[in-house]
Image (cartoon, rainbow, N blue to C red; front, side, top):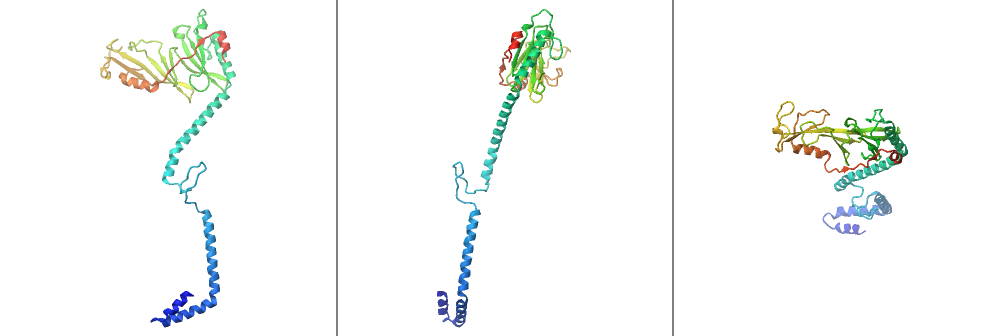
Length: 327
């Protein structure tokens, strides 16, 4: 009503006549439709309030919310900020690593539990008795036994040398001629319940705790002098065997200034001037065509051996009692 009264007073102005007509018209319609107009406004207000309440239930809260672990969450709940994405990416590798480690641990425990140790020991005993009683290796090859020497001077051990969670049988057959000396590793196959030959070499071996075996050659008839040639083997988990990773020989100039072909000592390769060069042969073929200096040789050797520690195998003599007592 205040508006209309104000409008009536303004009608006294220069355009008051026109305004007076408008005011009278408005009064007429308000008297006629005022109640309907008020009801329409009230209905619109109630509808707007209900819509606001409904939307309020679906919209995320902007204030900080406490997470289940008691820490305060971000005000942008449900929205990944760049910082959040970075945090998720940085923790993902750790979570994956933990999962993989857990799976490895479970797999190791499962493997240990599933191994038929009784069958394994029986198989190893059978191999040892075949050598002790019949002087025959598992592959049918005859042992180099002269019929008089003491077979009990040979040795064996049941030991997990390749660190695959199950024990291997290591046999050092040394009471024979040099040509007949041999060291073997047998590994038990839990599926077939049989033992397979995993490794064989001349029995001058150095075992390392990183899966490397250094096998000194039986003879040193070359130009290496005090350096004894050898072959490095590395355990390969996929094939469950030892792989030849390189043979090493050397040339000591103090022993001879020329090789057997008359070729001179490769002084250009002896960069440290100590009079010795080395040959690393990684294709299984013996050939002295690529001399290297001591620093390069040591780098190659350290790549495989590095800080690995020697493993002392708990060998015992090949006697009937020792065979029967393995378990």
